[in-house]
Length: 105
Image (cartoon, rainbow, N blue to C red):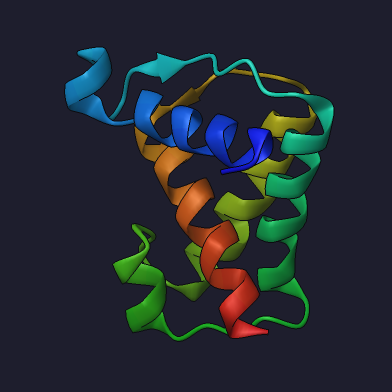
């Protein structure tokens, strides 16, 4: 396992509610590198570009609809760029949307 993959797994593990004792609406400041934040920002940006989504897929990722995905993705991209803490729910949606964007392109 590469160092980057190990760090990614550690980040995902830290975002699971049971592991950190937080609720889905509690904010978590995850210490990501600038490159990691940019990766997440780019993944979210794919949904407004080459990646296409259905409402059912958006709901499965934790959004209300495709429109909500696009609106929330813009908000999350700004928050990531500003290094703001996100809620546990937002981190999980960000990770899932980023991973699925690669498959949807």
